[in-house]
Length: 598
Image (tube, rainbow, N blue to C red; front, side, top):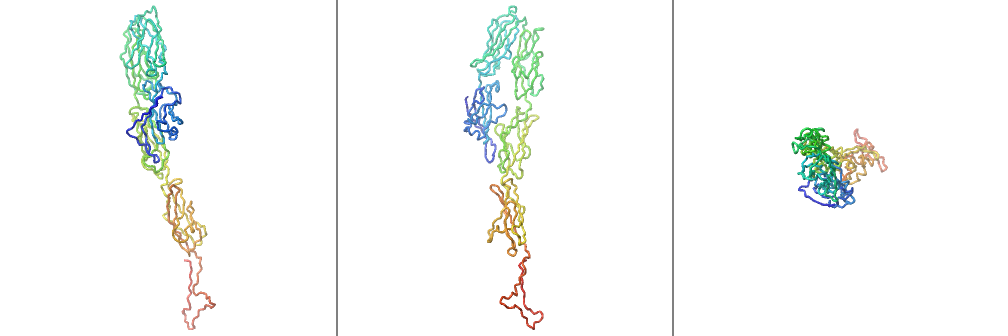
């Protein structure tokens, strides 16, 4: 195995967004490896940890994983060794039939930074296939008066390998009448032809048995054979001739099975039975043989299977026309499969956050989407947009990736959750679309202080109250959620001289109910002013306060008191005297009395 690293600088890094206050971006780095095909499962492909600039143990810690889509995953990550390994059998011919350079593409995601790395694995060919012929035996009919030098097309051998491991040469078994000549076609294929070297005599020998061997250039060399039976028949000196050397047709992929696509036609200037022509495929691969049918008598080519532009957009085959004497002609048939918009876009969510803090900045990443449409041209061009007037936007990222990010600050107290519908539509006619539904919860932050229901409170209590009597209750609400909305109550200590407020009043920290800690006496004081504080349990906590006025209501709990005349304290009678001459209305004395009640 030959690991390579090829770092290509992209002219512009695309901003994916900010998640929880962390800016991360997607790069355009590619890593190259080269491995031979037919590796055993678990074989080492390359040191992916080293090529990512990481230690092996960091792969799991940083959430490194393969996010490639499509065919069965061929590779896996060995988190212990830090290696990229094969996850199954890798058959180059199955993956890259007919392609000189077989490159497999996958994508590695660093989840903690949401960074994408492209990995290209080149699969090198080994000589694991021998040349083979589609037919085990071929019969050729040759007129006995055929001139020497006459050529007869022989079957073309197949070898899925490439380069020197592919088909290199043909060899004909030893005989006295025929030789082998190999022609190189314009398409690069080698076409064996049987050449008549000596005149035939049916009366001496009616059948010639030959063996054609095809060899590749591998080490060791692999071979395949087919048997050729040459039937010598009587005079027929004209071969069929096709009207065209090449037939072309373009057909949409959604044609019904059984549709006639084209007609090939060959004529033979001979008469009678010698002019009858039979048509057959001379060169056709296995896939095309399952989709197309050639009518042996009419020369019409029709479909017997469904066409799929995404699987194959072009077919090349060769037809031959053979008369009763074995003379043949060949023509090439080229069928182009046109794309129709029969595939809706596919969307894969490769990274998703189910919740986001309400104070997250604009551009915070919600999800990373991979969008793909198997169609081609405008049918495969996609656009993505968000349905509804939501505070989110889509930003084009690396390759076919889109980032779903916030477009403004969110407020949980206004909207606690969102159901986001991302619509992906292609440009076909009519267009096809796919909807992706993403649920997002807005997580609470402690951004609201508790708020009292009233701007201020007043309470009245009749004097001589029992200790512990309930005075009133205050209530404060916090629109936040959970711990951030849990409110506790307390009394603010005043800075005035005298006993503290807490010696008169207490408050239940959970319910906000205020209680009297002593019996109040209106004659001592008539009112009390205090501050109630409401504080939530957030981090850091937020609080607010409200003023409360407590008024003591008087009771008739005091008897009047006579201040004058006072009772004598010197043993006298305290009797007021009036002269005998006092007339009515004479002021004898004054009585002064007070009552402490109001």
